[in-house]
Amino acid sequence: MKPLIVGNWKCNPNSLVEAKKLFNSIVKGVKTNSMVAICPPFVYLSELKTKKIKLGAQDCFWEEKGAYTGEISPLMLKKLGCLYVIIGHSERRKYLKETDEMIDKKIKLVLRSGLKPILCIANLGQLKNSLKGVKNLILAYEPVFAIGTGKACSVEKARKMRISIEKKLGKNIPVLYGGSVNSYNAGNYIKEAGFQGLLVGGASLSANEFLNILKNIDKI
Ligand code: PGA
Image 1 (cartoon, rainbow, N blue to C red):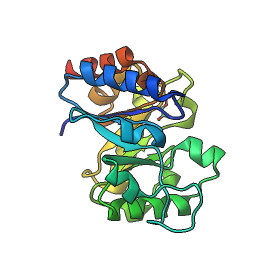
Image 2 (cartoon, rainbow, N blue to C red):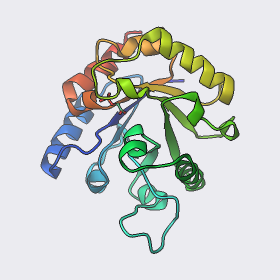
Image 3 (spheres, helix red, strand yellow):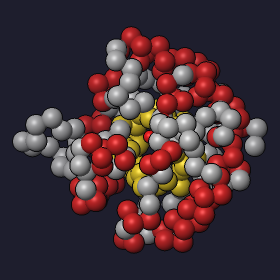
Image 4 (cartoon, helix red, strand yellow):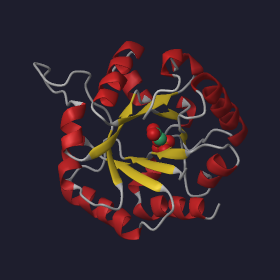
């Protein structure tokens, strides 16, 4: 399987002009064997179009429609051309108080809507046995200490975690690594730690750095 490299822009950039500029620079430079997806803020999704890379969202709600002020459903995201939805990111667990129960409901609806959830976990306790073998599910191991800190997880620790996740979920679910990934360390998580892809935060906000990550992975 080709590696899956996902850029998570989080709450950036703060104008459509900048978002288009960043997106277009990435699209223009993309020439890779990896599958690539960008997850911009919701408001830019309808404006960013290309056949070269996939789009994803950073969250969604657990109901299809109804009286839920401020929420966005997976079906709406699908209609905007999204393929992926990040679910349970540690920043949402922390700042929005998302619980395992909420995350569970979101995953179910994302799957029912024909999209692929990228479930973020920071430890094995957040991994339900019921997810074993679930088709279209993607896992992302993101240790909290490594997110946005510049202190990426050691390759050995990440490798052990990947093996534990595979023991619990089976080998058919792709597992990504996320947390301070950059163009220097990216290849190690694929080559040495055996991950099937990466979830890239800060480094996906620079087209150059993101494209260098892809280039380095192609060299493996
Ligand atoms: P980071 O974020 O690459 O900036 O550490 C990763 C993530 O939160 O998905």
